[in-house]
Length: 223
Image 1 (cartoon, rainbow, N blue to C red):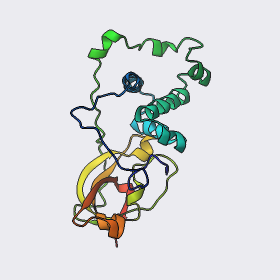
Image 2 (image 1 turned 90 degrees about the horizontal axis):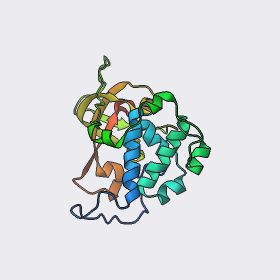
Image 3 (image 1 turned 90 degrees about the vertical axis):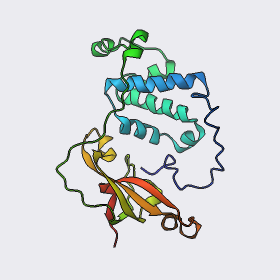
């Protein structure tokens, strides 16, 4: 979907002044760590996946999304998922008080403080087997399709309609546009090199390129 979360290539947000990594704290406020833990732990229920989580944040009101801090958006997205999955009611969210016991299957999966260190948080693999033959190979000229889906996508707006060259083929990985709907299906994924001049015209720096990972569904042959 098109909204303010897709900031790549956008202008007007001012300069960026990052903190030096050697002195930047992991969390700037105590509650950010709580939010991070909640997102990671609740994900273990398996009621949603990473693309559903991203889409929950993408659907925030644009003003709220831009006004919020990073972890405020994480929290707002999590609240949306808790409500939409039926884990909590809107009344419970607003009041911060449970109106009844959780379902038995969830009560049996309570994570105790003593369990945390023994709970693996290994990053899952998104590679999938597929019988589909890749449409492109390294060196092929391709164009990012200029499309505007209303749901979750990982095709950034600033490359849509622009041509590049396939730099690498990663194999098949979970396709986000279907994953957000609960469909776990692998589609071919490529690294595509775009010249800066192709993306930004005369404003693009010379001898500069941008590499973008794009699924096959986002690409077509460049004529």
